[in-house]
Length: 289
Image 1 (tube, rainbow, N blue to C red):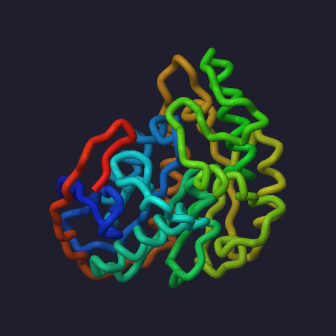
Image 2 (spheres, rainbow, N blue to C red):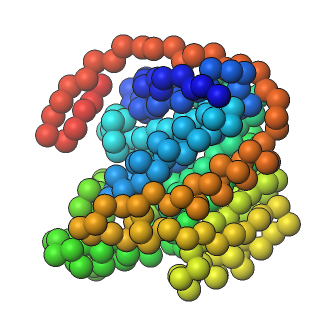
């Protein structure tokens, strides 16, 4: 089955659009899978994995949308003074709504690490067909602690642990974004829509066998609509220093085959995204419109 060339574009809010890349097969599509990446160094380490997953999904008849959150990657910064306490979730919602605007009858979402956390808290969104939470972070604080430990092991300077500042290699965000991440708690926090079934009645939770905190996640997500599996390869993908990250073949195959089984076989062809011009001003803090 042949696939078309990926199309890159900006979409979403006029003043702070998201950057996206759409991979689409050259055949009638079964729907769109929105891919929600991690943050910081993990974003860079998982780039090849998400590209390969997008390609695999097109071979199964899906279109796949990769995107960057605002103030990360090639997306524009959040609007100055924006005090939205759910900004990351808003970006995921924008991506899902954009996928639907292309004419997709069916939409699924896949998130890894903090990307899974953002998905799990989605509200004010019509249900999707399938949800994959791939190696989610038990809490925002646990993510910060792990990133500090990895950076220190690599001999890199990081912010003081008592500051709650997210100033790590490859990851420096505004205070409101830091607070948003640090409030995330899949273990003891309020149930999110992925946990309750409000987001989807088909959820796949993928965890690591070697991490004790994941057992608490499994207990918390023990619901009839949630299928749980352990997958290998995450340490070789994310917990690396001088070595190149290794694409987790088992995890990638698990996600693709599960979506192939769960998602409907039929669907309508999606329309190509419309391209729009944006004026980019480059400053020391990054691009702005």
